[in-house]
Image 1 (cartoon, rainbow, N blue to C red):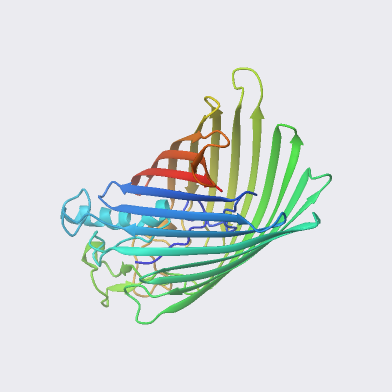
Image 2: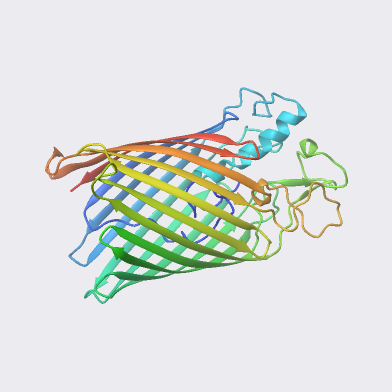
Length: 404
C-alpha cells in the first residue's frame, strides 16, 4: 500500500495540479468536525474523520489546525479476490484495479494485498498546522506545515502563500510555493526511497461586477526521486497479472522515469443571481487543462450550483467530468527488456464522472450549543463516482461547524 497525496479534490487522479495550497479558514473562530464514508463496488470501504480549528489571535493574525484520519477497511468475505468476480482470474484482475483506485476517490491509500485482493488494511494520519498574517493591508501571508503518515508512506509539506489586493481590492494576486518531502516504503521495495516535489502557483482573482468573480491560475510541479509507490508488480514476457503475487523474474517492480514535470492551467467564474427564478442562487464553473512530460494530458470540467431554499437551508448540486490520456510508456504487455514498466491504472487513459448533492442547515446567529459556543452549520453530502476502469463509489459526508 502507498499514499497518493490529496492534491486535487475527489476524482482526477492524474490532474495533480494547482490545488496544493491547503483549504484555509475564514476570518472567524470556529471548529469543524467532518465524517466521510467511501464505499466502493468491490466491498472496500474507507472511513475518514476530519477535525479543523481556526482561532483569531488578533485582528490581523489567525492560527489553524486540522487533523485527518483515514481507515481503509476492506471486507474480505468474498475471498482473496475481494471483488464482484468471486475468485476467478477475471475477478482478481478487476479487483486489483478497483482497490488501487481507492486513493483516486478518497485520498487515502489503496488497500491492496499481494494478489490485488482486499485482505490488506491501513490507517493514514494527517496533521496541518498554519498561521496567517495581514501586514497592514499591504500584503497577506500564510504559512502551513502538513505531515501525513501511514504504514508505507510518509510526507512532510511546508507551504507559503502571499496574497496582494490591487485596484481597490477588485483584484487579488496569489503566489504560492510548497515542497513535498516524501518517503516511500512499499510492499515490494527492499529499502525506503525519497521523493521530492516542488510546487509553484500563481493565480489572479478579479471582480468583474458586484455579482461576478473570475479566476485564472497556473501551477508547475517538478518531481524527482522515486516516482512509483512500491505496491505493484508488472507481469512481463507473457505472464498474466493474476499470477503476480510475489516478485520473480517474470513479475517485476514498476519502473518509472526518475523525474516528472507537470503544468496545469485553471480558469473559473462565479456568478450570483439576484431576482427572478434563480434568485438567491449562484453558479461556479471551473475548467482545468493539464499536461506533463510523461505525455499525459487531461481536461476537467466542474460545475457547482448553490441555492438558498430558505433562510436556513442551502443546497449545493455539483458535477465533474475528467478525462486523460495515457503515459507514453503504458502498454498492454511488457517484456523484461522494456526500460519503463507500469501496472498502475492511474497512468492509463481514463474518464471519470462525479455527481453530488449537499444540504446545509445554517443556524441563526446567536444560537448557542453551550457556554460561548454557537452553532454554525450542519451539513450532509452524497456523491457518486464512476471511472472507466470499472470503479464506482458512493461517498457520504456529515459535518458540524461550531463558532466560538
